[in-house]
Image (cartoon, rainbow, N blue to C red):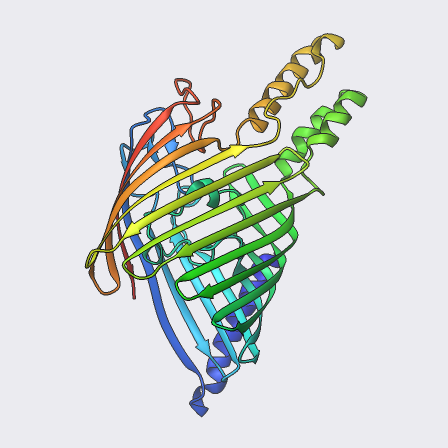
Length: 409
């Protein structure tokens, strides 16, 4: 309810301010948008590849060629009410956890520029966890069909309801931006939701000629009712179960994310890369992800190649309860809980990928991209695939072929 109230408040401010100021001629209302029409083919027939962890279907098992993995439409309204006060609302329609394309609010906030270099925002925003976080869904603004999942899927809750402060300053020939934010958010999936509360983050970006340096650090508390109920079942087994539940319980424990990025773009070519690490003393464990992409521009064509890697750095197995110490049916219950626990702690993304693609900017505001990905899933990982069938074997290799038409207006 708080989440909905926050963005509804922002929308109300936008619409009512437009009504109040319309007669004076002060407000300036702009509409723009972006979108992607894409199709993806996966040669893995027993599981689905998805770009969004919470999507219900993807390419592979559900559809040989899926138009639902990357396709989306975003519409944005920006109202400048005074030279210092403005507001933005952005609505995005894309494949959701329930199989629909129902629109969702991505941005809904009010911004006040205290000075030309210092601004304050309140409402719904996107965490600045990675270099391309804020425009990660605007594929036209990135060189790929989709951002490298080895990094951009480390944090599932991307937007938040809260406040942020941005400060811009110059040092010699470099321009800098420091951002601080605080708030919380949630992400729905088929059997529940994941909530993030008491989240805070700090990020810094430096643009120095053709070079961009980026760093961010943030923490959040994650909770999920379904996971809490699972560990409540462990607590029924007395002290041993209580110890396991306390060790892996997610509620009340902080997850941290550290990210570093760099890009160099002199115009005719570019190279960019990021490294990120998430850490949690819970079921979520510790993971690392990194990628590097190189591209070369030839007139309206941009061929590119990239490599990426994701790995889990914490333990991926747990002995669990000693089932032999309990009478039936508790023996079977302990074995079942242990099996599910090990599936969960070993489900983190562990893979290496090679990406080759080419982008064609055939007209202003429109680009066509073809991309091939070869993914090698390590350590018997499922590589983030969903809808896994009994015949699916973790730890294999998959090949993806993607076509995308990206546009902005």
